[in-house]
Every structure is written in structure tokens, then in C-alpha cells.
Length: 256
Picture 1 (spheres, rainbow, N blue to C red):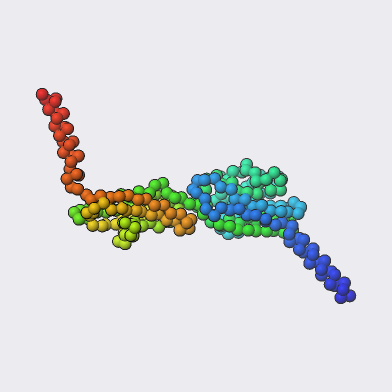
Picture 2 (cartoon, rainbow, N blue to C red):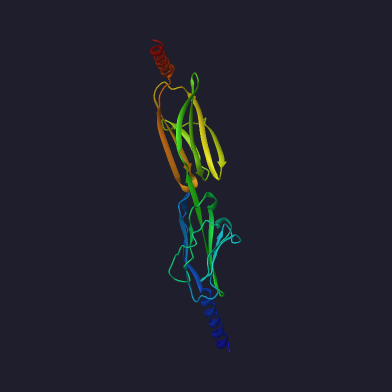
């Protein structure tokens, strides 16, 4: 009797293990970092024993926010944040059970940064895997310039627009960081505009300045360098005097 019970238990265990592997995700490809506006494919490859009740679903940030669903032999469906942002004609495979398993996002924006969960299920089993994706905007330009405030003081300004996620920025002079800088950050249309300013004593000789913008989450850094020269009051007025002289000569030619 004991042997019969053991045999039945082994059979049940074997059958349960077979059911558990009916659907299995073998590969989830979600890029860690993508650039703003660059098309990207999020792929979810799987094996399935039989196709009864097969459904592929994608979730964003948690398993209650459904953004994509596909059932074989039907058209894919996009929802929520992905509506209108996925190429529904994209084919990840020629297999009818996995043709539209992937997400082909045509123009990812910063709002699509987050966790993506692929869930594949059938009538008998389900498997899920999650990975994170960050959409990075390095900014349109990085500018470094000098401005003159008053006698004995000059202002160094570094700025960038359209950055994501929120970056860090600092100014260096001769490879030493300027400590008295003032940082200003504004968010516009989901992206960050950043500016750092520092007042320093007027230069007495040429100095090398640099500005560094760093996005920690993406391990991204960009640097701009410039050599600034001492300000000369005389050089500032020379163009104006030349302009006045030109106008004077022109008027003389008309009058005489």
C-alpha cells in the first residue's frame, strides 16, 4: 500500500512539473539605456508546449498597468502610455505563436523610462520577467561663456537644454572645481534645462575653464573647455570708435 502511495505521489509530482514548464520565457531583451527618439525593440522570447489560451502581455512599472496585449491570430493591442507609439506591423519571428511578442517603440520619450514586465500565459501556466529601461536625452548643446559684471569681477556661465534624467553640472578652472557656483534647474516638457553660474575675480592672465555635465543613472558625461582672456576696457571701445569713424566718412562723402 505504501509503495502504491509513493508511486502516485511521484506521478503527481512529475505531472505538476510538466504543467509548470508549459510556458517559459527564455530571453527578455530590454535595453538598459536608449537615446531620446531612437527606435527601440523590447523582445520577449519564450517556449510553449501547445498554444491553447496563449496570451502575451506587457506591463509598465507594475503588473496592474497593462500596455500591450497580443493573442495569436489577432491584431496586437496597445494601451495607456504606449497607445499610438508602437509599430504594430513589426514581426519578431515567423512562428505564428510569437510573431508579435515584441514591442517596437518608434519614438521613446522620457516618460517611457521604467520597468517593463513581459508575461506569457496559457490555460495551464504563466511566466513573467522584468527589466528596467532608461530613456536618456543628452541635451541639445552645452555652452560655456564669460560675462563681465563690474570692475574686478567676471561671471562664468555654463548651460544646457533638453536633458533627461536630471543631470549634475559643475565648472572647473585649471582643473579645480569652482566652489561658489549657483545651480539652476527647470523642467520643461519632461526635460531639464540646467545652468550653473560662478562669480570670480577678473583675470590677469589667460585661464582654462571647463564645464562638465554628468547624468549618473546613464553613466554619461560630456565636457566643454575654453580659454578665457583678461578683459581690456580699451578693446571694448575700439569697435565703436571704428564704427563712428566709418559713419563720419560716409556722411562727408555725401555732403562734399
